[in-house]
Length: 226
Image (cartoon, rainbow, N blue to C red; front, top):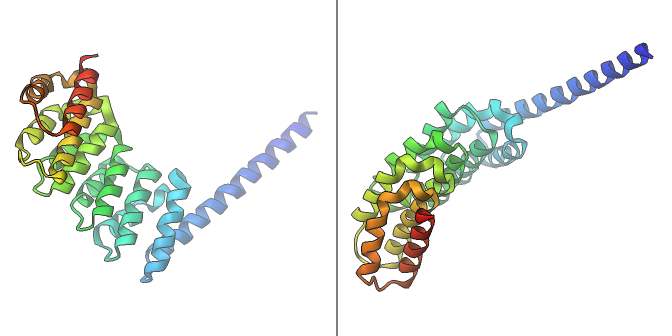
């Protein structure tokens, strides 16, 4: 009986090793494609790496390099997405994704924002810095990431309030969307964003003509006061 049990354990161990070896081989092949001069190969590789998730963590240095230097926007966007799925070392991945928030393509910015939120509290310092960027897309996506992080983003409350108050009072649609991102982030942080209460109360007292903004402020106040 013991001999049979030992045999089964060895078979299972061998099967696991074989599967692991196959995974490692697949990742190495994908890393090889990341180094290719062919954009199509690199696009496919970043997509497959994202699917493998943490099993492809060893590809992170190559993904970071593509995110920072590749000319193909689809490769950069895919690299940003993959870095959020592989769950690599935050000390190197978060700065790379934060830098990508300044990419010239808005889809890359959006992908970097989505990936940053997966690093939670570790991404908050970089996102706080991004709130003061001159580019409104960078500010908006940073605020959206902080909203997704929620309570763990409480250190960003002063930065969000400052960003909201610094935004142009002009009620163009784009401006309202940016303000909405700040409001939503403060609401998602909840009671720890209590310093925003007087700011939001003033908005309602002023009778701001934008219905969406008033609705968002009212909803944020409800979440903060709960």
